[in-house]
Image (cartoon, rainbow, N blue to C red; front, top):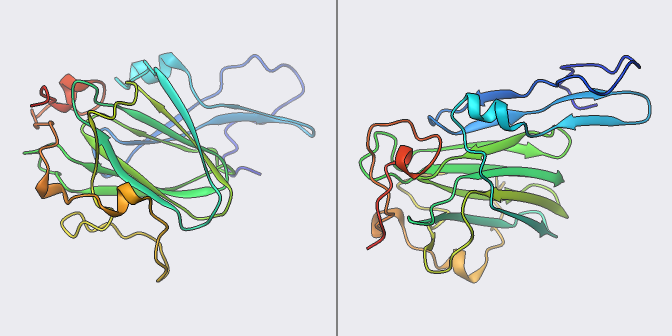
Length: 222
């Protein structure tokens, strides 16, 4: 069913530890997370988060806010969003209904991969997630109608520090799977500035961008 037969239910018990696969993407610190599960003829148990597994890899676990977003139409595009320090957010993205094309963009000024992006399909069927550390912007495109997305964050939303980058910024050059269609955008996202027009508040320090602001080279807002 899910295409990831990491464990198969044997009829003994549900208490065994399920494996979670962490697959690093082309951007250091950005991970696709594929859950382990057990399944029988009437149910499926999927483990989507285990604190220790994240901590062992230096990944964030201190989620303080969780939002659910329903996009009723295919082709709805949100982003690219990030929050400046001191309320920079690492994010964990999961889809519970439908499918999205999910994107992370390095916005750390001075980073060798600044303005580089990585994207992958996240779906309820596969159960995979995308983990994005601080210092990266996030956006997604719905590939099916009535798609529900859950986003966990390590800092609360702040209108003061919230920023948006235009989804079609030529410096970034994201290959959105739009199939020639025009995306559905909010007023905020349609009017977003280019990356080069912004001071993101993140300065590359040469450290691994995995856990908090110090790893992403954040600095206080002006």
